[in-house]
Image (cartoon, rainbow, N blue to C red):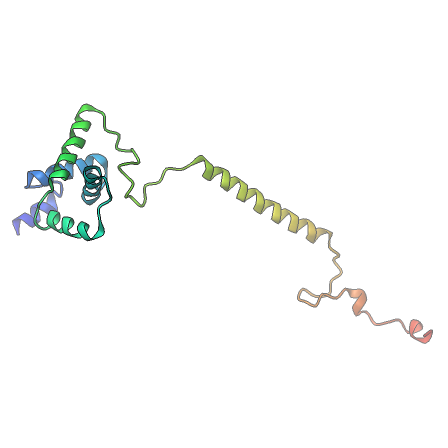
Length: 161
């Protein structure tokens, strides 16, 4: 129970030194520990961490505090790079598993400007057509009859026919 309270008070405190190395490297990169395991696996094995193996590795790491050797190696390398000043924690290679990591592209601003221009063009066109259209319509809803079509015929015109 005391261990739980110590963890709640200092979540960065880790009793296991190997897990502390992984946690420190994850903090340096500003990613989660499991993401660091994914990156380490990819670098060591040259392929993405398979789904069936990820559950086993995660359980062994989180529940049993078993840190794979390739994860230790990767974490130590990240720590060394940070000590030497050569670590760029904003490198997109470290954040490829982050769903919220996004770098704005200049193309996005251009697309927005084109969409706004098209919308303004359509709205201005609709206003122009509304201003030019005859205003003698008798009803707002269809069928649209002009007042001339709804006016009764003049009696003199009826006698002549």
